[in-house]
Structure formats: C-alpha cells, structure tokens
Length: 479
Image (cartoon, rainbow, N blue to C red; front, side):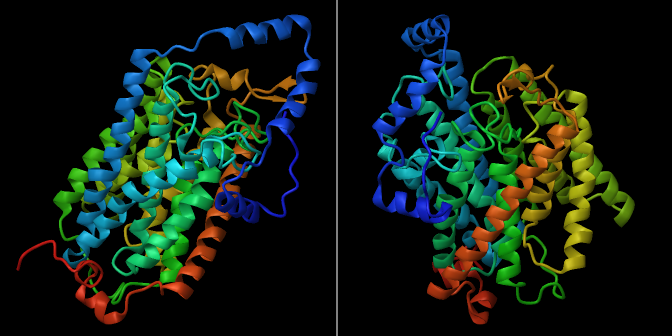
C-alpha cells in the first residue's frame, strides 16, 4: 500500500524531484502506509512474511553469469550493432555523424542512470515514477539481491542489465533524424527524452507499483516482457514525430539516397540478432526454463519475419533484396520483444510472419502515402512492429509458457488470469495508446524547446556538405 501524493502535475513533479534530489515518500509515510496492511493479515500470514524476510538472500552464480552476459549482449546491440546497421544505411558524408548519435549515448545515458535514472525507473514511488533520491548515485545498490526484481542475482547486476536498455532506446530514435539534425539539438533532446519519457515509462511497466506492472502492484495489467512499450513503441512514435518536425532531407524523395555500404548494415544486422537473445531471454532474469522459451520464441519470430518480408517484397517488386530480408529480421525481433516470454513457438512464428508483412507495408505504402521522411524507417519497423506484437500478445498469451500470468494479478482481492483473450487485448491496447501519447507529446515539446534554444536543423550548406564535416570536423573515408 502506498502513500497518496498531492502532485500538481506529472511532469512538474518529476522535474522538481530530479532538480531538488529529494524523495517523494518519507520513511514516516512509508511506515504509516505499511501499518494497516500488516494489521489486516492473520497471525499465520504475518509469521510467514517474517520467516520469508529472515531468509538470507543468496546469489545464484549461474543466473548471475547469464545476466552479466546478457548485459554485454544488449550493449553490443548499440555498439557495434546499431552503429553499423544505421551507419551503413546513410550516405557516406553522414556515416560518422550517424554513428556518433548512438555512440555518445553510451556515455550520456550511463551517467544519467547513475545519478537519478535508476531511481526514477526502479525506486519505490507511485504509479508514475520512482523516488529519484532512493538510489541517488546508486546508493544502496550493491551485491545483495533485490527480491522485488530479481532474487538470485546481485542488485547491481540487475541495475546494469536495465541500463543497457536505457542506452539503446533513444539511440533507435536517431535513425529518423539522420543526415539533418544539429548535434547540439540532438543531445538536448535525448537528455530530456530519456529523463522524462524512458525512465518514468520503465517504472510504469516494470517498476514496483508501476501503473502497468501486472506482477507488482499495477492497476492496468499490461504484458510487456522485454520492452514493446518501454523501448520500441516509445522510440518508434517519437521517431515519427521527429521526422515530421524536422522535415524532409534536401532532395527527398526526388533524389536517390541509397545506403553507402550495405555490407556494414548486414554486419550490424547479425550483431543485432545475436544481441537480441540477451535483450529478450535475459529479461527472464535467471537462467531457467523461461529464458530458454524466450530465446526460442525470439529466434523463430525473427526467422519468420525475414521470410515473410522477403516473399512479399519479391511478389510486389519482382526481386528479393538483401536489405529487405535484414529489415524483416529486425521487424520480427521488435515485434516479438513484448511477447517473447509469454507465447509458444508456433505463436511466435505466426507473430513473425505477420510482422514481416505489416512492417513492409508500413515502410513502403504508409510512408509514401503520408510523405514523411523517417530516414531509416524507425517508426515503420520498431513502432509499427511492436504495436503489432503488443496487440497480438493480448490474444495469444499462454499460461503454459509463463504460469505467473494466470495466478499473479489481483483486482478487488480476486485473482484474474491474463491469458490471451479480448480482456487482455483491451489492457494491451491501453498500454499502447498511453505510450504513444506520452512519447509523442513529450517529443513535440522537447523538440520545440530545442528549436528555440539551438535550432533543430543544420543549414542547407552544412547538410549538402555532410554532417561528418559540418558537425564533427572529420571524414569517414579518404578521397
């Protein structure tokens, strides 16, 4: 049971708490809120709770090894995975600037995470965000497990694993602004975005007491195993808003703008596929049966999506492209991410087959119909893909794969199964809509401020010269 807070508004409260570095919940209030809950328990229940609390927390070395390896795999998805994937897709005069958009976040987000990000995401607070002072500069985040999140690995290992998600998410957005955004405006935007969108959203979906956390005190039980809402829909919708506000690249779509090095992109694609096993299967937070099931679902969805994208492209264009197959693979991974720990292998294959077709249509027909310039198709692949995955999950979530969804969530004291059906589909839709509105509106606000302070776009001469030289004073290749 949590204390009730009288906050003027969500954003105002979060900004105030971050700037002041104070807690949203005092020890006295916490004690008061715990008292009635404890007093309502029977004697046997109280004894059981005390016995559980008295048990020593121990680290399982196998689980810890898997989570540390998964953390490294997720970091590899950013560098070199996403760096090569995005870098190869742009023109040669913008390759370093595009790579820098991902590389710099490995530093910036890591520091934000240490100072207040981990607290906002996983500290105890309210339904919207955690107490930014609880783990300020990672105080109290040590080598003992935190049983609220992962009872068999060090708290610090859990923190590191989650940090890698925070790094790659804003990096995904950079694909929509490639080849035309000022680096200063980009930095300002991603700092605001990760602080006021990603960190709170991670708390809502995965944090203790978060509004959408079906396993720990949430009121709207949204199933999202590894980041459909938190990572892909948030970044995908934000990418679309960025593309619309920045406008089209000079010459788009009349001038051809082919990738300068498809080979680099294919290498990045392979690294993303391998790294995604850490991303999804690592989210089981142990090396048990669920990690294996998630690993398998992830692989087969990616394979199915690559196949369906290739087939539909072949049928519609007369030839299957290598880059299309790679794009289908990424679409399958993004689509299965929220569902990976909740669905059977046949369901994962079905989700992948749908993902390949839907995402192909999004990056061809939808994009051309509305005329926006999402440079590297972040919205079409990540946004549309994960929206599809979230909604399909609502129909096919299986307690046979993850028994917890049938027995954990309670409403009015009654256990409610979250197995696939129209009821869960409605919960999933609520999560999708909330995420889209939050990320879209916040992105619009941050870009407006960035435009006023820095100016969003480079001028025409700088864009023609290329961002490598105009923004960073260097070239990727010698003439």
